[in-house]
Image (tube, rainbow, N blue to C red; front, side):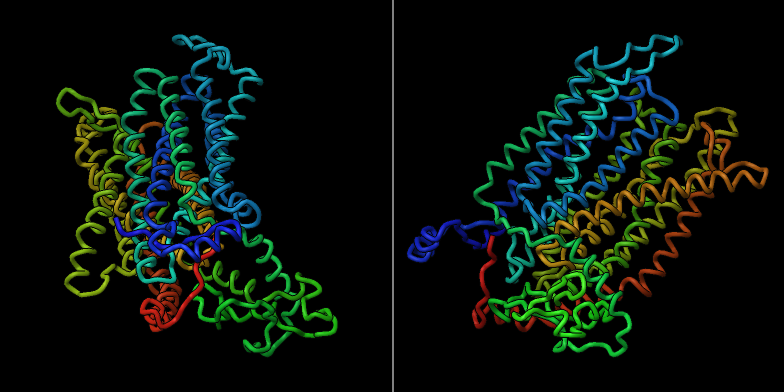
Length: 596
């Protein structure tokens, strides 16, 4: 691993004096890869724990709580939706009040409490309805039993809000982006974070789920609960090595203030200049690279910082009387950062919709195929492993083979640009759906030819589409996550994490909407429905795949001609800072250290 980045800080003035007197070699280093080791350890065990429960929750509720039909779908959907929306609240708490360290800690504790409650439902029979034997009428769970279960799921959703909003951002905080080394290490961190995430998923979807379904639900739930407890211990072990940035205020309220002030001053016709804007902030150094300075993009929002009437808008000290009427440049630029990431964010959602197909219809294809390999029957749920293994292999090759060797040849850091990676990801998504459509056509034709529910098509034929789905995630998802975190300032990275997970939630909801619309519209023709029913042999699933592939083509056109410009603007702004950054690295310009 690379060397640690020096970001020494102490809480008291006496410690600061001791640091100034002590030799440089004795200064305690914070952040860097030492801190990242603890954070990735915490993240890996947390993901192993949460995915182990989430992936098999539908089966558990069906077999142990006698749930079925719409009620079961509603429970799982609402819980999943809440788990992806709560990161917005987590980002608010982290940025405005608690900071990322405490938000992560409290989120982990809430998840641990929720997992413990769900684990007890598997171990204590009184917390569940009686087991349903044979074809007898199944007894519904009592209200207090559902209340206890929902409380456990609720704590897990609350915990996910603190964890998902801050885990990536807190890891990014450990690198000093004022240095070339820090910026390079940050780029590697995003890939290694996804690598550890994928390894945890592989273990969860193989070993743990096998134990849950074939050995014991209680043991299968107890293992991830213990893993989460271990992740909290690892996280606390590294508490002295972390860089902890202080909360900088509520970004969401500031954005609402800017929108309100800009709308109230929409009558201003002359676009303001930078010198005429309200900017009372005093900066320690005008050379600090992390400072948000005025930009010319989205100039309509600059109206929020225009001083129309100094007498009514400013007090005697030159401070704004009403922050909902007059905002400073810093607040305006933060909103510009969020607006600037939305076009790329939208392009990512369409890629995530493709990945949703493999998690649902892709598995259904495998269920109605020949899953026997030798004397062993491959569980259809294991097909997701092909996607994760492909993702992990690509990240390993990219970070450990391509980047080092290409950098050595070119004598500079050689990485694929964000534009290229996202475009490759969109192309992979389109190819994934096209391959899936061809395989489905072959699967159904063989099944209809033999007149059987199961097609004789072997399970190996489905590997390419799942591999392409994993590569879509490796190129598109990782790149979008990197763009979101790099586009916003350090104080808003929790917001970027929340927006990333929100895109996953929106993709799930949009996929549900598209599926229902296609199912309704396809029935109007009077022929075979594209979707619907329990037998894929009676449907035209390949047409649905081609429809989603068409959306992917439109997404590529949208990204190439529109969204990619925002990445170009971002990368050009980085290149304009190259001279200053080189001077900083060479020691010609001194920047203040990152303060916790």
